[in-house]
Length: 323
Image (tube, rainbow, N blue to C red; front, side, top):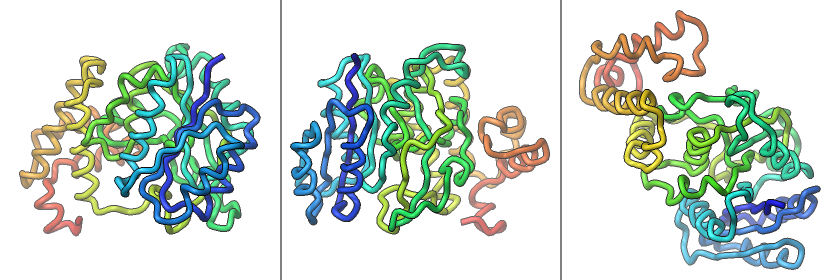
């Protein structure tokens, strides 16, 4: 029987962590291993983890100083990898959430079924939905996916542009992905986006239309409900992401058309940062609009986005009110 490992990163989480750990104790399919990396907390988080050592199969590593959410998860994943076989399973956890009792059971079963959206093959990753709760635990929305207007599946080309639809706390993936996932490239902004792409390229992933956790939204989330970012900041992050993928070992596993698309997308973004207009990219933008703008609906919407895509950042920020 495959082992199930939970990977948890914590930081100053003393307020909600006991509820999270209690929900791990209540799983109908108990975890075989839980690796918790504390990212330099200065409250009682580590002591809280230690107090559950008799109830849960915990391995705890306390980092001496704060390194950031992404690096803490990378550290935990690197600790997990040598302890697991290819058939074992990994689930990611956030310190503020509450897992519904059947989360591990539901996702483990999903990974044992053929994936119709990927030609009937066995998926490398599965993820579910979440209820959204507030700081007091009250449910404020029944579906994270509907609230955030996320698509259950994203094609690889859309993921290569920086779009992502999977949140780490909702996923479970096969440990056979570790050779692709680790080490996480430095240019990758968030770990779950990278894991999702690795799964998409190698085996695909499947969505379970059922809440598996209660996802807490509050002012202290490391990564919580999507917030607005400056338009130019998003484009810089997308360019950073695309370059990280192009320089990674995963690039070799992309299909020829996906490699060509990624290379063209990087050149396009670089031109957009340096030129006033990039009209030469219009045919390519029109052809690939559904990949570049997966959340846009209707031909007119895609046409408008494609034409706007030829406007360089110097012009858009100076004359069109973008920032």
